[in-house]
Length: 325
Image 1 (spheres, one colour):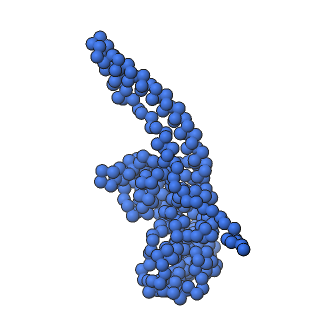
Image 2 (cartoon, helix red, strand yellow):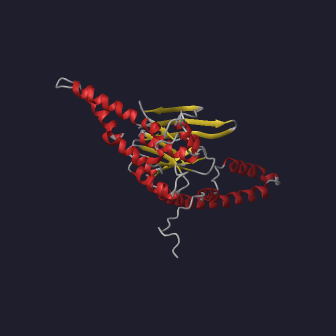
């Protein structure tokens, strides 16, 4: 377990966003957060990133957990060049490389299990960061996000907002967090970059939590769907299409129960209206009214069905030839 939330709640003024929030994120899970607009997906992301706090409940994280949460622009000094900014990505790798050399030279047959475990953990992290191939990985990542060698000497302030967001995204991916929090990650990306990102995230060796209106992206990247609805979360195993099929089956069953209950409500209301005015039947009508008032009403599935029809972006793959004359 990397992150857990137990019995959490979150409100903004009189608006209850979450009333009973329970969540577990495990290593290498690739989770899609879905739900209608305003259901609390971005708020949940900000809670996980600790940019919002829970009103009640507990948020627990694995010791030393490294989170990656994409912000629009996160450059401390925009007078730096692209190359200088990206060199910051190499800092952790170089530090670990130096530690590995010192530790390897100091180990011998009498080394403790703690020292051996430290060496193994450092080696694992070093390899995850790209190891001795990190500089080539940085160049490949920048190219994938649409930056080339001629951009290396440009100062950060010369890039557009969208370009800065892509640079921030590239930096975050290269830092290899234990959990990636991606809120609409395909914004500002062209189709070619989106398809590259899909492939990259599918192979990403750690956990991912994301939101997106790109259904194809969700289908290809995610293996778990968490629905955010009515202040609570419901987990579905499988990709987005699998979730939709499960949801449709559940709504079909709910519709039958809803229709049956509506008929029962109409029957009871008819009896109540018929006998309320008769003194000999007033107690009977009153008991039926109490029963009706206490009835646990089933939600109209048509409302949920409309909420499922989210405005997904169209992703059309054109041919190489746009116009041939």
